[in-house]
Length: 427
Image 1 (cartoon, rainbow, N blue to C red):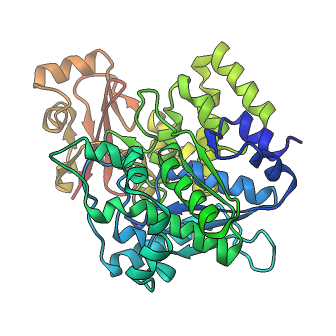
Image 2 (cartoon, rainbow, N blue to C red):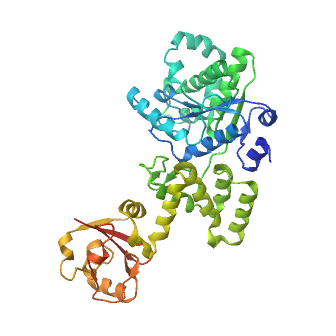
């Protein structure tokens, strides 16, 4: 079995380390390591998955992970990666957000008490809100020059935008985060902070503070930023972020997000985000190279990630829903699963009474739903075999939608061609 450092190297998870000796300590020693999470929402998103998985890997190797939810720093805002000031959250908002994040962390980390590597979730408001401004200047501020702070990329980029600038509040953020590291070092013996590569400046500031204030060594480790094939950060899509909360992003949509991964990035996602073995990943790399049409790597990725975040039951449901989207089994789906399958499809509501008699004229329905621009175009589409009701091809003109076509009590799925899906809802 590979050592933890060898596993991290295989998976491409080490972007920068403050000291090359960290690898040996990870393999033979025991560290307490922390990652900070932004509590600006009541749910994490897929952009957080890499750090969650990294913490889990370290815990499995015998190290102790600490998840720090920034109830204190969340009231300030990290300038890193932002062109403008972040909105400040109320205490009540932060409290609600922290409660939501805790439940998601428990899917990745073991918080059971007693073991040396039991995970902790801490809110930095606990130690920051009682810190006086004078004490902060004396104990932290004196160790750094303004020149050093301005040199950090996250600050300098904002200085270079004269029309936006940076407030003193955000300017001081890196010192507040450094104090977090110092507090965790003092209180829990924490000697490693991890984060994305865009956090390097903030993290090494904490390493330096521990060295200057305590005369002790601590470490920094950053991971690469996980991006899509087009270079945008993982977690962003045309419709917004992909969340870990199933109420915000359904398990089906979550599964599909990873299933649609580009061949160019699926191998790196398998390494960074799953717990598949090295041999399994290598085999999937070969499948992508030699049989890309099978999408075996994408299927394995989507299955592994949905299992991890939502559980095997939801994975099975998402796969059944995906199979039903273009199969006749759609007629057997329950309402919740049907709506999960077609959550992005447009909806047209028609009166239930329309089913009386012969039913609803399909030609008229195609025009009403916007699937055909005219009755003539609708008749042509039907005669060419390009129209489907509940994924069954309509064989000829003169077809009607009847009560027998209703799915889950009040829906009919109408499709033209491969992609144009429309949900008819009876009311």
